[in-house]
Image (tube, rainbow over the protein chains, first blue to last red):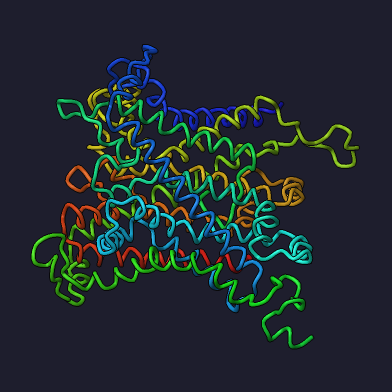
Length: 273
Length: 329
């Protein structure tokens, strides 16, 4: 073993140690504070108490807001997957002039018109449509934002599916909906799962849209409620905040593990999935 | 066969790849319609509305709320002259440049390069010797373990919800027992107050490096091993190989990555969750500034003008990206 190789090994481990510390240190609080009695911002050895979780179940907003998040995420996911599957199938199989142009234009639009850049008109639009403070408003706005990328990804999956499957179904007299439901969709299940998980994670973590579009505290999803835990003295209630953060993060981490185990991570036109 | 090329495909005569069956085009349109409708109303319409709102003196309350007046381009000229806006834009450029273009790109590449599956150095094999002893060191189990731990941590930082991450970084950099103060023995130092932009940049490197790491890992596996081997045989060192073989081979990926992470960083609302723009607007990047102007500030017309400027910058970045994407397709 030459000295150069020894140096390189040392360099490798120093780099790895530094990176590990950089990424791990900010996360420590998330695993210690929820199990500490009266936690502060400091990371300290936990007391291994579950008292904070008990306080959280007593809070009138905490658990209902997780339920609100789940409702929002599931509805947005269902609408996005259904609408995107129909559109992607048509765009994959029917030759429309300028189809690729349309697809790229849609992708362009969804990356340009972000929630942050369009928050003012979206707020205005919801006021005019009388959809402010309504679940359906938030669901539709988020679906509109997710659809272009969802169509783009699903069309990719459908393009790789052999057409002969559909043709043989046609021979037996299946109509387009039957072909879609019984032949195409079962064959692009990985694509549908990708879109579904991606939509759920996106909605689950989205803060800005519900923050803008809901007025009633009881309707808020978890992302907004997390910032509304205060003590009687008006200070942030760190016991509830840390415990709720942990509970709220677990589904995302589980879904991430599911996807990376099952399908691995792939790049679909660089879409953040 | 010529008519099939010009006429819509009909039942029984469908060209390969088309949906057979009557009235394809119409049915295709019916399938696409719900998507088009939703995208038009909830994505395109808001963008167009920005154009109009930016020309008015629309406010959230008061007479201008009921009867907004068209004030022409004055919102835009005011914005360009407004010091708060120009400061916010400057901070945003610093944020994008420091945390995405430099930070995430470099750290993401460094991680992908150091943790790649092929060993760092291959032991020298004299030319002509039989390759019985395989020139590639088997990837040690320690190395694999280290790799999966680091990758998991980096990915975790990326997938945790933004609101949670914001609290983690408040706890990390605040005074009153913040983790960094405990490590550096600087009790009572509030990094978010003393260095708001520096802290935001470090935070966003932590938050977003995972994407660059994954993209560069995929890119590096596409560099042909024969080229690396040729560089090694020509006596090139690690840095030379990087500069002359690897970087030119993945230039397209670097460009793609830079554009995407710039776009996302530019539009990131997480800074609001951490600092709300404090202290005194010193951490108000453009998304935060728009929010503060529009809702607590109630100046919707002015905020719309700034939104449009933001949309135009997004458009430039996205157009460049789609151009690369199409060229590769």
